[in-house]
Length: 196
Image (cartoon, rainbow, N blue to C red; front, side, top):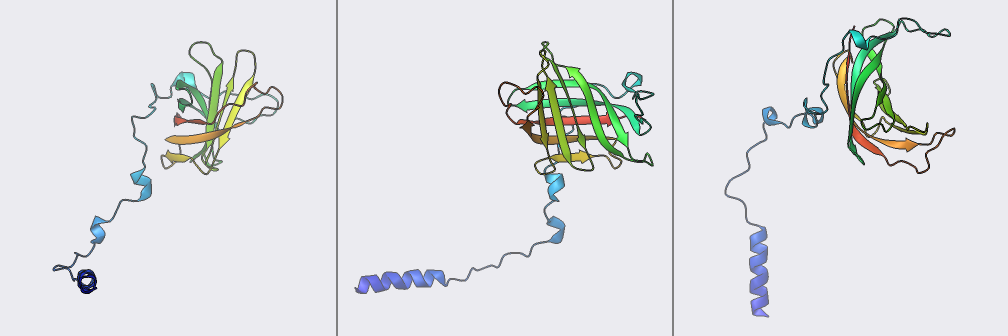
């Protein structure tokens, strides 16, 4: 019993030990960086092969009353990672606000998938923080994905004319031509740049 009391005394004494030095105060200049900069998307990820040029202009006129005054040309690049790696790049339409001071949406025009397995198109809404993709197979079957604003990381220039988005988007069903099997979620990156 006496040895038990001695052991208990040592435990209690150890709990009351005061450290010989106190910890240094935290300096505000050493504060952690903001979350956005801590998870910034590297510039080398899914970089555009070329910048927008004359071949990437938006159409000059729309049919059936379509107003294209707010559209401008640009380029987009899609880099899918999961479930299958895929990279496509091509022209994009950039939708500008009424004052033409900021891009509100980028729509990547359909681009042929290497190997002749159909076409991919997609884009993102900067206003809503949403990403959307679709794949049209050779037989005309359509698979589509949509996500946001939760789960999307979109970083853009001040006017939205260039940027990058990391995303995870869920499959949607096309009621007219559904695929035989529901496609899995897509994970990847979109990078865009708008011309004038």
